Image 1 (cartoon, rainbow, N blue to C red):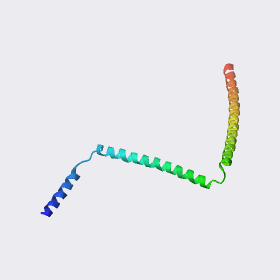
Image 2: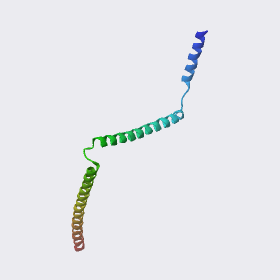
Image 3: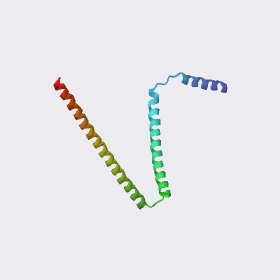
Image 4: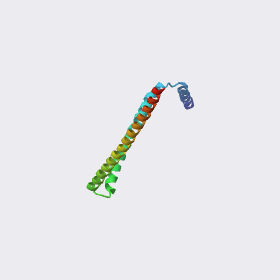
Length: 114
């Protein structure tokens, strides 16, 4: 009697295996796992940022005032370097424009002589 019940359970399990699952059956599962992945990633980023900030405060070699002064100096140096580079590029561009104008002017003069 017990054996007959076990056979029926096995037959029921085999019947379940015969059903074909549609892609639609997994859409909700995919959405759920995707949202878990995104949430986990964002939580990890947040925790990592907090831990990193805490460690930085603990191991900072200088006081905040000194660090801010250094950052300000570095920022001003960066601005000066960027301004100098921009002026160099502008000078190069102006020289190239003049050179191309002269070249075009010569071509136009040759074209009129022909």
